[in-house]
Length: 196
Image 1 (cartoon, rainbow, N blue to C red):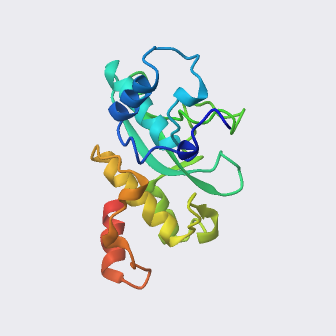
Image 2 (spheres, rainbow, N blue to C red):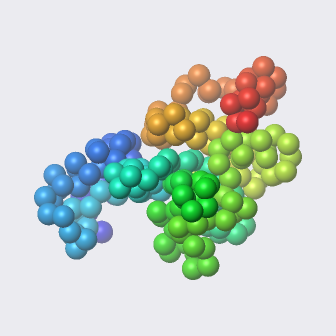
């Protein structure tokens, strides 16, 4: 670990919130286009940052692509874990296909370029599954430690913003949602509408 400066041991998604910012910083640290980078020259991002980069690459190559925030079961096969992936338009299938840029090391059985839709729920699907009781609160886990209501809420807000092309960072979750709970019927109805 001595190769990475101590201030950079955490993920850097919040410092570099866009694909352009990630690439700019990557080249600032080492201006060579190479896979053989020293650890200190890499930008350390989560599945969110990797999905931003994959989506931007696909778009640059002429493919329709978008980042999605939701929950994956295939990461551990025990509960739904928050995970950001890419959805791209497959012209042959005439449908959107799920693709995971950050699956390596998690599963040897999942095809990263065509994720089974039974193994991944988008933010809206997660919210609706939680609200209908199809998914138990304890089975939805957000990396920050939240489960159930808060975990489903985080995902639907992040995914809604992704669909608008605003892949917000973890620090930019709207403060307006702080204190919202399952007892606020008007709020729940509004979120159900957004998730649908």
